[in-house]
Length: 509
Image (cartoon, rainbow, N blue to C red; front, top):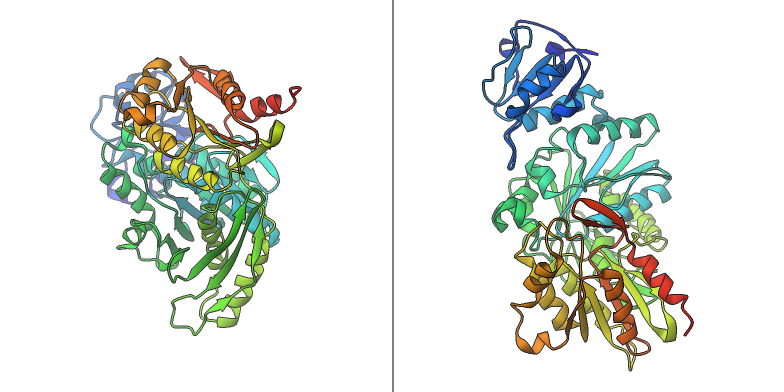
């Protein structure tokens, strides 16, 4: 229980003269009118699809003791009303204060970008564990508190859940946290009260335009993570992405870059890659006026996909920078060598380029690729790994009630790089699956349509793709990755691409 006035004083922008004259005891806080209990502070804002102010009466009826809103509302005299310009922003800081500002007791690195967030955070989490730290992970696939796996909800949880989770981390002795930070979370200020010690940018391609409306708005939302960093933080960006340097504009943080193609603070060069993983060489050249240009011995990592080298570089750089090496050249080199050795022991994220052996030398690959860029990257890599006589076959769909513009782009990328393509469902939600498939298929030129098949049953599509393949083929099942369900008409039905491929692997040949 907290005093309303003391709680509000911890919100930036609220000064004593703006506090309500009445002080009440707050027993909890929520932005969900259904979750209001007696004594709660209810927070309301104007959302994209709903206006929380419309639920004020319901919140008061359920026992709300105070209201924090964005416009004047009618309430009983006994219920204080606090009006703020941005209730989402205030909510983020209120949630932090409610749980005792747990983020301030943690070393948190935020990772944003279209693709690679899950892999980069998972690699960083593993590197910290190998360094002896108790590490936490917050992301799309799962949340981790040291070796304990916790359920994941959104890529970046809502403000209340986020700070509740961070408080659990503190209670469990966690010291370092790798967090995926989505563009939607940044737009909604969910992480506004998190004092990141650093931020990493992976890349930027077409995604989430159903929410942001334009690519510019999507890009600018990502940039907020870097704009909010302090001068004591670091900003690490992918110099090979054309938006990489844009993310660093206006940031107060210390700036660093990583690259596969050009000189950078953290540079990686691929030596060779195959179905067994890849070999690469690392070079450390921090551009801080220090005479360092250290190249480390070749490293092997059992992770499939040469594009993963970018994510490995990001994690390597992030782990080094989190140690705050300062101006000591020897410390940079020692940390670079230590974390380079750790890279060789990393495991891939479940559902990210996950390989499953199939009969007659075939290989099933399960990957979360669900954007045109990710589909193209995955298939480009796999094309180079197909043995003689084999084929590259893709199975993919597009989510319902989401960005429709990327549907034909994903199908085009698949048809361009694969020998055969099965278009199928991927969480159709409330849309007709056949309509989604038609929107993926119809805009394609005739010469690409010839290699495409449509099968709305995802399980059946996977079976047919394997049956149609020649021995030694690679069958890439894209879009769902780690997910273990199909969402259809509001119901989540059990579904696992991995389990289906394993079932095929056990069938008599």
